[in-house]
Length: 162
Image (cartoon, rainbow, N blue to C red; front, side):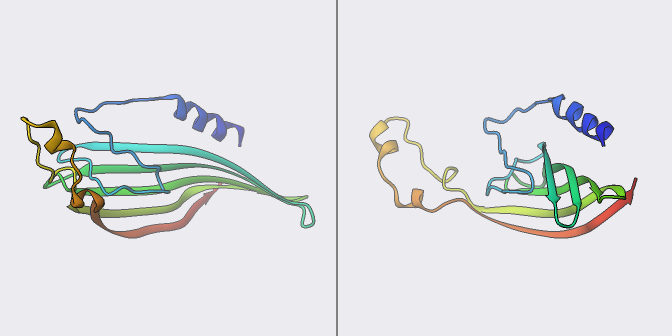
C-alpha cells in the first residue's frame, strides 16, 4: 500500500502544461463536463488523485482506496467535435481482523464523442467602432452553449489481485 501511495504522490508532483489556445477548457475528470470542445488537432490530458478510508467497527472491516481519475480529450474534424477517454484507476486495500487483500484495476473507463451545436460567444458580432454596441444587452446571450455527448462504458470493475 505504501509503495502505491508513494507512486501516486510522485505522479501528482509532475506537472506539464502546453497550449497555444486562448482558453483552457478544464473540467474535473469524472465529475463534470463542459459544453466547449478543445479545438481541432488539440490534445488535452486532465487528472486528479483521491484517497479515502472506510471503517466499520461492528464488522471489523476497513478499506483504503487510492484512485487516479483521468480524462484525455482530442479535437478532430472541426473545432466543435472532440473524442474523449475518461476513467478511474483504483487501488483498493480491504482488511478484516484476520485477512487483508489488495486489488488494482480500472474501476470505470468510458470512450465517447462530443459535438457542440451552439456557441453564443462565437456568434456574437463585434463592432470595432462602438463600445456601446458591443456592451448592450442581447437576448441570445441568455442561451447557454449547447453540446451533445455520446459514450460507451468499456470496462467496469476490472481489477487484478495483488
